[in-house]
Image (tube, rainbow, N blue to C red):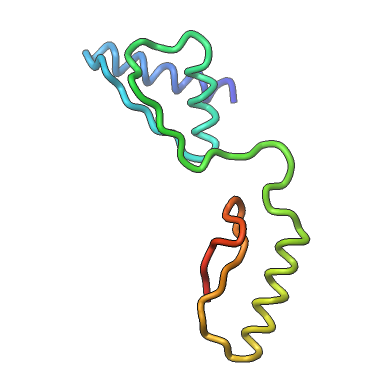
Length: 101
């Protein structure tokens, strides 16, 4: 993680050296965490906005096995009935609002 955070800072400094004064940074998944760490200590004045998409969850299981097993059982029952309707399932952070066949 430390080398990733250092690289994020390097790229921000590189953009600043090229004359960019209002940098908008975007992090996805673990990149959101790396970006947050990079900006939390001595944030560069050149970064005007930060966007964090789908930040990774590093403590505990975001998708407990019991939920996964229950969804699989329901999906198998619906498949056996040839049910081709959309249904709501759990998917990682999407608790009961991920729609699939």
